[in-house]
Length: 393
Image (cartoon, rainbow, N blue to C red; front, side, top):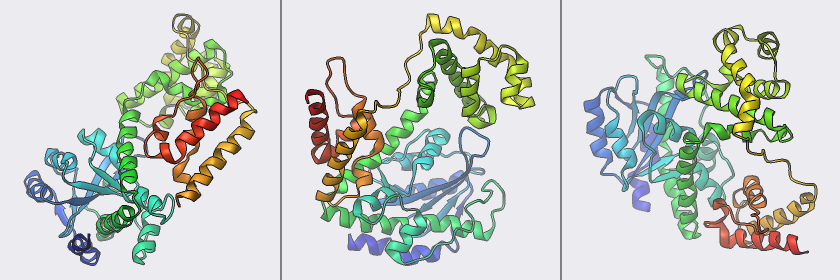
């Protein structure tokens, strides 16, 4: 590990970030990709724009290896398949920080999810450095280096980029190799590296699941309107699905078409003409382009509910769970203390909710996938045992 830390010396990469190497064409990309395929790890980051689009628009891809920092220009390089080969190479560890959105960009723009993946934000939490640490705080904690935030709101699609933008972007990857190696050393010593790798693998799975999610199920996210009748739930389902499909096809943000509160108000009020609909939307362009389509979905809601009854929306938990949740959370806190883990990473609210809602027709509960891996012996089995006891006490 010491040898690798010397190889990926952060002082050298910090200096290299002041004059990063630009990759503007496919031939140059091929050259460096062949080099990266021979390495044990590379660091990755992306800069993108996503103000009015459904998908992120790549503006820059940053890479750090053991020699320097590189800026790949996705607006100039015509063929990104050499990079995709590196991203899927099984022997090259890809290091990112808080990489969910980066993974989404790679998935949509280049058809690949970087694997194997190591996320330094996840690693920091398991190493006990801190929960949900931003890169600036992480670098300050581990390396005592202060990073600026000067270019966080930059336009990454402009050309040329300023020298400040280039330096800022390169620094985002310059420190990641040594941070990952420092964490690896500590996590291996504490027997937690496999836990982190399992968590990092789940990032790719969640990105894939979100990308392939059924638009017809989107409406079930709106738990605040669980009480709607069948017709209004069918309308919310069909309208949400239409918005999802339209936004994906036209690459526009959901809010640019219809904000969530508009969906809910339309479902609850069921406006009977375009004048009433316009009073909810209050956007002339949307009414002109989509008013008739929305009115058609509203008119079809009763028949849609009859022919294709909508699924239920999970209602808030019964008040009896207030006391029970305190007991389950207490089990989580005790397990976290016993294993010297941050409670936030051992037991999350969504895991408890999934467990509580897993009750089958026979009255049995089942551990959700998130509590069935490394968490199972630490806290999953105890939670399952206690929740089963609730039914017999």
